[in-house]
Length: 235
Image 1: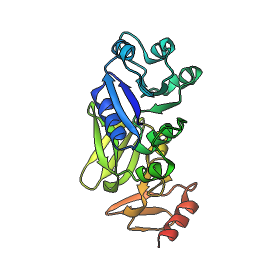
Image 2 (image 1 turned 90 degrees about the vertical axis):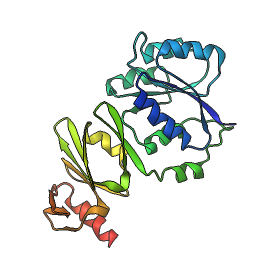
Image 3 (image 1 turned 180 degrees about the horizontal axis):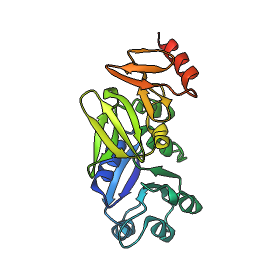
Image 4 (image 1 turned 45 degrees about the horizontal axis):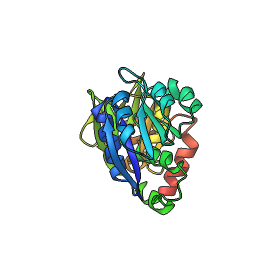
């Protein structure tokens, strides 16, 4: 039996991201999607689900308040762009708290926390699914899909980050710290407090800088030794 998932979010791009992730994950299926908590309340009167992916800031009734009304034993995974709600989420025994935008890898870690012996999600299948090929970033009021192999480096600009790819750049409101969960660690490395780089994109380097095409990026002292060790391993 597959685990049935209910998606509750008032933003269509967020529903689209969840739909893509669920469809890519063995053992999951979408039971329904709702635009707000009251619609979800009606849906749950007639349908049983195993997992509820629940946004927090929604019209009429927020996700935290809605979760407190639920009687059925569904696993709740909160999805939100606001980390300030994390404490409230875990106070009502949520399985996990996904901070938007989140990667497929982070999504799968949340699924792994759900202990269900009848689940078809086995550890080997999870490992296979971790070979994700893209990430979603919020830009221009939509979620922009960017292939991981296309990313050259990411630069922090105050409260925003600029994702530089082979043929374009995308600016999104996000912190460098949140990128730690999103980026595959085998492919990306933080070389400076303001820069993540694709290790595969580095064409040359010295003790002070790395070079990606014509772009010179600084290496921070705190990251230098570990970066050089990683680059040596690649040789």
